[in-house]
Structure formats: C-alpha cells, structure tokens
Amino acid sequence: MTHWIEKQRYIIDFTLSSLLRRKVKNFGLLALYTLIVFILASTMFFTYAIKKEAALILNGAPEIVVQKIVAGRHDLFPLAYVETIKNIRGVASVESRLWGYYYDSLVSANYTLLTPPGNDAAKPSAKTTVVENDSGGEAVKPLFELNGAKLEPGTLIIGNGIARLRAIGKDDYMPFRAFDGKVLNFRIAGVLSSQSELVSSDLMLITGEDFRKLFGIDNSHVTDLTVVVNNPSEVAMVASKIKKHLPDARPIIRDEILRTYDSIFNWRGGMMIVIFSAAVLAFVIFAWDKASGLSAGERREIGILKAVGWETSDVIQMKFWEGAMISLTAFFTGVILAYIHVFFTGSIVFEPALKGWSSLYPNFELTPFVNLEQLTTLFFLTVVPYTVATIVPIWRAATIDPDSAMRFTGE
Image (tube, rainbow, N blue to C red; front, side, top):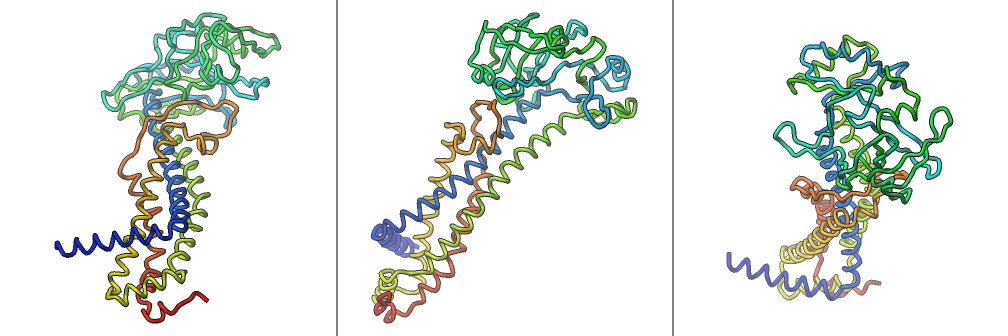
C-alpha cells in the first residue's frame, strides 16, 4: 500500500510539471471549463434559493383565496357570498380583500395596490399582516412590514422598488388618475421594509376608502376573500365545498400557489440550462479534441516515458490525474465564483433572465441555500461529461508505440 501511494505521488508530481510546461494551452482549457461550471452553478443556485425564499414567504399566505369568475375572468366578489362561505363546516374565519393594479405611464410600470386587513371602512376586519409562524414548523417570512408607518386616508405606503423607480420617499406626493378622470394626490406615509422586497417591490398599501374612490368600487363588492380552515388537512375538502355551494367562485389553495411559483422558477432555470447546454456540448467536443489530438511534443513525451520503463497503466494514470486536476480545479473555482455571484452580487449577470423583464425589479438579498443534491447534480453535469469525453482518447494515447512516438515530428 505504501509503495502504491509513493508511486501515485511521483506520478502526480510529474503530471504537475507536465501541465506547467504547457501552461498556455491548459490555462485556456481551465478557463473555459470554469466558465461552464460558473454558468450552470449560478443558474442552479439562484433557482433553488429564490424558490426557497418564495416558499418561506408564501407559507404565510392565506390557506384559501376565493375569487368570483365571470366568462373565465376574475371579477369583483359580492359581499353577499361571505355568509354562505362562513356557514360551511370547517371554516374558521372569512376575510375580504381589496387589491388591484394601476399602470403608471410615466415610468411604464404596473403597481399593485392593496388594502391591508382592517383598513376598509366599508368592511372592517380584525386581521393583521401575517408575520408569525402559525404551525411551529419552518419559519414564515412576513408578507410585508410597515416599518412603523401609519396608514390614513389620503396616504400611501410604498415598496422599495417604487421608491427607487420614482425617486420618492416619505412625505412626497404621488398623483393618480381615478376611474372618472379626476386626479387624486396621495402623500407617502412610509416605505416598506426591504426584507420583504421579493413580494413588496411594486406594492402600495392604501386605505379601503381611497381604494374604492380610485377604482370606483362600491361598498357591496371586494376583490376576493381569504378563508382560514380549522384543520389544515381539510383545506382541499373545504375548497371543494366552496366550489359546490358557489359554482361561479374559484377557490385557490396555498399549495397551488406554491406549485405555481415552483413551476415558474423551474421553467426559467431550465430554459437557462437548455440555452447553455450548447456551450456544454461545445466544451465536450473541445475536450475530446484536446485529448485525442496530441501534439508532437506530447507524443514524444509518451514515447520517452514508455521507453524508460513506464507501463501503459502508468501513462493512463498520469492522464487521469491530469484530467482530475483540471476538472476539480475548474469545478471548485466555478462553484465558489457562482456562490459569490449569486449571494453577494445579486446575480447581476443573469438577473434579467432569471427574475424576469420589468421596469420594476425587486432588489433583494437571497439567503444562501446550497445542499449536497445541487452539488452532486452539478458534478455530474460538468465533471462526468469531461471524463467520458477524454477516457477513450487517453487509452489510445497510452497504447502508442514508443519508437513511432519518438520519431513523430507532427508533419
């Protein structure tokens, strides 16, 4: 065993000196290899981390959201339906919501306007923003935090994205054109916490009175309802009962929202990987060409080694260590650079493709989330193809005749 270890040490020493003698060629291969790993790792790290972030935030979302559907489209919800839903067995509470979208032509962006629970004068509510974990399990991030700002008639609380885009802040004024053409000016009472910017970047909080005045919604309608269920295991059953009692309503359970977000981020990440798979294929072809297209110097080197007593297995081991040094160096360098890129620079290279194209970007810091599954998948996507692409050419190089190799001039 000691003899084998000593032998491998000498082979590794020789391999290192051989790599350094052709440092320009090997550095080019290493740089390309590292770039491929960096691209794939950045996409994977970002996708996993943003899915984790979204899941933590959406765990605090309502168990069931009930909308009214007319001709396949979301319509205003009549408050007369509330009692019907409250009387369904298993329902703990029902709360109404007012929310909608407003297009700002000045900056070509859509804002999401929301009335926080308890701020609709036409339909008071005792509910407040969800900020705690209601199950004692995994942490639940707040949907939004008011940062001490007080919402009153004639005021708004805006998200960080809006504040950056419009270059406004507390005590500034924003004009809005109401449904009837009148211009309404609202004072900015505060800016939402940056901790929840993933979902609050384009958000505006407004009182129910001002919301109804802006969009022309009467007191008998709301946007939708949220339903809390006594037993979490009966959420799907309660949703089916709501659909049975109100055929024109559409209940949406929290798990469906989580699955939708997972699908969106998986699709974006998958598209990025598919696009860059052409680069991976090109790299595999390049690696094959490098391993099979030995230069005159490399052929002479193999011939000399075999002439002085090296076995074919020794040459294969040398080439194995050469490939292992290049691939592992590229793998770990690419992974480290991708980690810094995603979690410390906000994924600035791939941000538009992974976050989406919009005038109003969320600006948030992702919590680092890297596990063994990601690293294993990445390893098999990058290191294994390189190994497979070089193993056959390496065997062919190792079986070369010493005399013909030393006579080879490359002509």
